Length: 621
Image 1 (cartoon, helix red, strand yellow):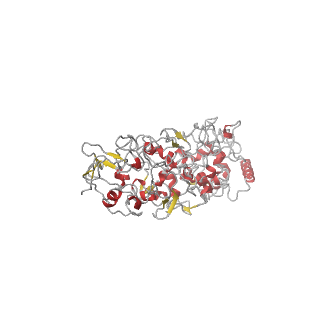
Image 2 (cartoon, helix red, strand yellow):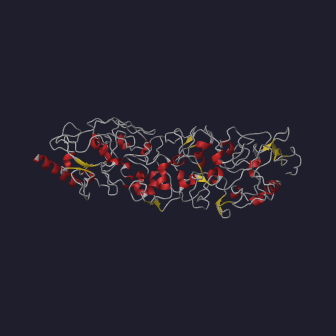
Image 3 (cartoon, one colour):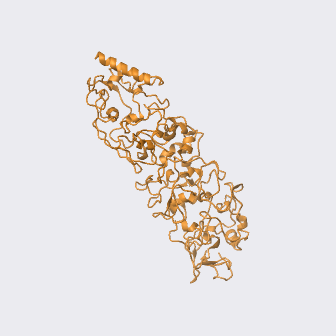
């Protein structure tokens, strides 16, 4: 026994010498002979709880002394995981750690010396049970399966990590617990004393295996752009309440801001919280100094739909064209690895930095995936194009017009915004109308409705209309983008829709002599168009009569996106279409519009407009 004590003392001295830079109680909570440890026993030589100098028995290493677990585990899995876990045998290296940390064998159950009476309890966060699906994968089938996010050195001969000091190392060519943890030194990382094998600030440990710079053929590296991403560079201090990694800033926390190597709340991809709940710790305006705009406050308004049903959740492995799966989590519109802070607002249609390295759908066919998206609208077309299973949620988003001219799917905006449409807002193509546009401003107006903002240019973005009502781009203090708005349809500004009791019957919401400022019913149109010019009849000699005098909304006669189809009776210039929930045919004459004669044939508000080419009759109420 005396020789055992001497051998264990020499072992402890050697380990201390190898890590002389580590200050304080190096064994930390593994110092089972100390009353300072959460679990301790009567044997004051801590080495002997795990090691027997003359051998403890059949085990992964000759000197191992703790009874080994025979537990069978559920291993990590996800839709984007390329490797395959192998059930660790009793004699595998990681069983040394799991003999205590799976919670099935109590500390102090030694092979060579019998069982010691222990006091205290292990922290619940240190006990993993038999379900390891929420812990970083280990005990993998070798050789590893190649994947674009993994450093190529792991597939070399021999395989190794990219850590220059090889403190993060493969164990017998595999990933085991001691790849990332050194059980003898709790405080190598002074900020996060969790027996890490090296300082993990700024993602140093993760980058030993995960490679954001790797280009592997045509395979997309989802980590690409990490070096310049906001989660890599942000110096915002974190309160760590709730806990987001233990480090003082977002930059230092790095991967640990969003991922947990053990006991992850969102098991797939080891997220701290599933999907948007992973983002809420920092993006709810409370956890960072200085605070960032409160995105989650926007969702309390009229916002994009978070998943609510078990079959309606986001998964990174899902198709880019989002069929029959109506949800909009943060990661549907943002790549958290590559997203950059938007410090300036360039001209449309290029994607903004906050949506860098994000997949989308080409507008040319509505099907072809483009990864990464070049233009902002390509990301929107994941859901707002040819995808099936879309739904009009009028209770949440407000009234939806039923257009006379449509391509069939009213929620597919591709034919509405296409350059082949008779007329459309210039989102996916340059403005090219041959007709004068006297009401068009040279600059869009800020949210105050008076200050000039971005130059009008030849294109607009989806987010020029669908945006937070207090967005930063146009002079507010809130986050940019269509997270949510106090106005219907996630509109940036107020826009009222005329609605009728039945087609052709009385309109129920009229706004005669409307307020033409940013507070009025058509403030959204007023962002780009001089509404005073509109009601002056500069572009059509009946605007003042219909809009100013009688209070009809623009929505009765104009579509917001464009004409999604063809109709022999509608020439379609100037976004003229008709909401057939509001208007009806004039007798046997179909609803029609001719720019050549500047006249319509239809019934609206109990009034039959003259047939094509005839004079406009006065409205009677």
